[in-house]
Image (cartoon, rainbow, N blue to C red; front, side, top):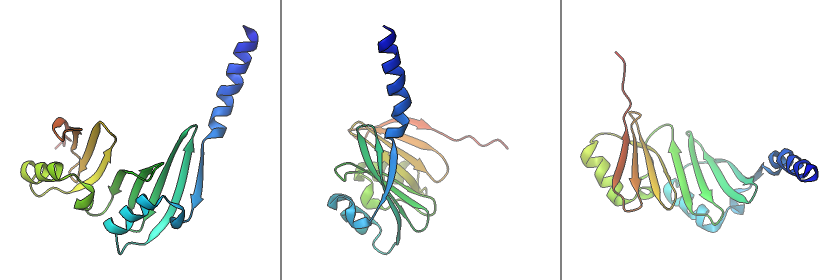
Length: 148
């Protein structure tokens, strides 16, 4: 039993060492990710590209000029885009979500979109967060309340 505990402790201490961020060149990104970046932000300079390894998880982070950050899965699938100045390009937002936001939150910009297979999370420029299921139906609104 002691031997098992020592092995477990050694493994747990080694886990943080397994996490690493490696700076790579833009052309080392999966082709699918490169195409999305170029199509969504054709005139924006790429500042930094990192491959992030966390145990068995690999993902890519691309930082662009103007405070734009994008993330991609191991295969190059788009998973997140955050724009600190301006809106997320409409081509990165599913049309049903884009139409819902335009109708229900007229005049608001989408500043971040994050998704996996089951959930889309949207951050609006006023701080409201919207969650949609995989069928693009609204399932939650986290409204920001201002104290005046």
